[in-house]
Amino acid sequence: MSRRPEPVQVVKQRRDAALASLTKSVPYIGYLGIDFDRRGDELTAILPFQDKLVGNPMLPALHGGVTAAFLEVTAIIELSWALLWEDMETGKLTDASEAARSLRLPKTIDFTVDYLRSGLPRDAYARARVNRSGRRYASVHVEGWQDNRSRLFAQATGHFLMPNRDE
Image (cartoon, rainbow, N blue to C red):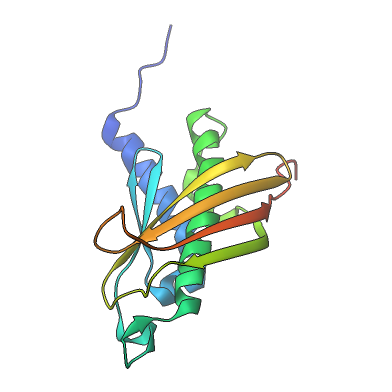
């Protein structure tokens, strides 16, 4: 006898709870106010504008360190979400929220940011694309924009040491 599939709302709630647990496990995400919009397995990071994020009040422009941190956080959460997503969809996880809280995050090997234009005093968005992900190493590209997705204000490439999943 085959098992009935779970209702869509139950699956959606489990995925949203896992993502919320994952992001709450990184205090800096809360400090910057970064939020993630999930559509299926695709994540969009959102950095709501706050005065504390301005680096040069004469322009005003987002601080370069905030921009780099926003892109790096986006890359790390995308990599972690990909690991969680795989385990959720294959049924390896019974409690995705607990797994998200205990998940070891990838470690940054290097992270290169291209500042293409000043980040304006408004909300910013970013998406990461995993170029390669193996057992020990991953390569990620991140794009950040504000009003128009085709007008990037920053992009980055990062390489990460993946956590050992056999422990």
